[in-house]
Image (cartoon, rainbow, N blue to C red; front, side, top):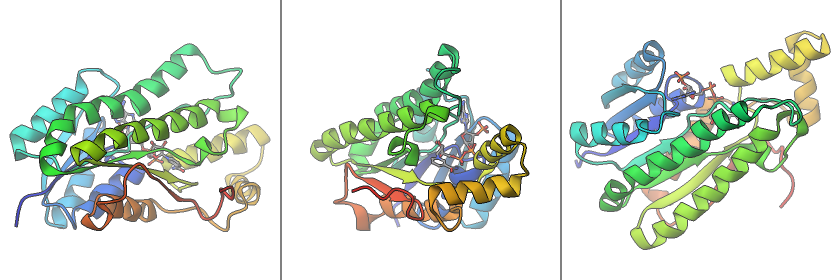
Length: 256
Ligand SMILES: NC(=O)c1ccc[n+]([C@@H]2O[C@H](COP(=O)([O-])OP(=O)(O)OC[C@H]3O[C@@H](n4cnc5c(N)ncnc54)[C@H](OP(=O)(O)O)[C@@H]3O)[C@@H](O)[C@H]2O)c1
C-alpha cells in the first residue's frame, strides 16, 4: 500500500484531536500540530493505537515561519503530503465595540493566515499527490453576531479563501473544501458558555439550555461528528467535490 500522509493542525484537543484519531483509520502517517506538547502526545498515543505512523510538531502557527517548518519536517519524515487539515483556531469572542486591534490581529494571524501559509507551502507536494485541503469555518460566518463579530468575519474570510484555493486546485488537481461546524461541545464551546453564564449570572446548565433554545437545535454536536465530515472531505469518494462549504450544525442555519 502507498504511504498516505495527513497534516492536522489544532490536534492537541477538541475537533482537531478527534479528526487526527479518525484519520488514523485512513492515512498511514499523521502529522499533529499545535502548541501544547503534552496534549499532542496524548493525541499521538490514540493515533498510534489506531496504527498510524506519527510526527508531533509543537509550534505556534501564528508565527510566520511555522508553516514552512511544518511542511519541511513533514516532507523530510515522510516524503509526501496527501491531506492538509487546517483546524487550529482561537478567535476571541469579543463584542465588536470592545475588540482591540491586537485581538483582531491575533485572530486573523492564526485562523486565517496560518492556514493560508500552510496551504501555500504544502501546495507543491499536494499537486504531486493530487491531495486535499480542508479549512474550518463555522456557523458564525452565516449568522454574524455583534457580541462575537470577529468569529463571524474571520470564518467568512476562511470560506472565501478556501474557494480561491479551490479554483487554482481545479487546474492543479488539488481538492479544497471548507467544513463549517455548528455548536460543538469542546473546551472552546464550554469556555464560551461559561462566559455567557457569568455575564447573565446563571449556571452553566441554564446557559447551555438557553443557547440550544436560541439556536433552535436539539443538542450540541460532538467533535467526532465533525471528524467524520472531514474524513469524507479528504477521502477518494469526495475527489470531485471542491470549493464547497460542508455544514454540520444540527439544523441551526436554515437559509438556502
Ligand atoms: N467548537 C465549536 O463549537 C466550533 C464551531 C465552529 C467552528 N469551530 C472551529 O473549529 C476549530 C477547532 O475548534 P475547537 O472547539 O476544537 O477549539 P479548541 O478546543 O479551543 O482547540 C483549538 C486548537 O487550536 C490550537 N491552537 C490554538 N492556538 C494555536 C497556535 N497559536 N498555534 C497552533 N495551534 C493553536 C489549540 O492547541 P494549543 O492550545 O495546544 O496550541 C487547539 O488544538 C476552530 O478553528 C474553531 O473556530 C469550532
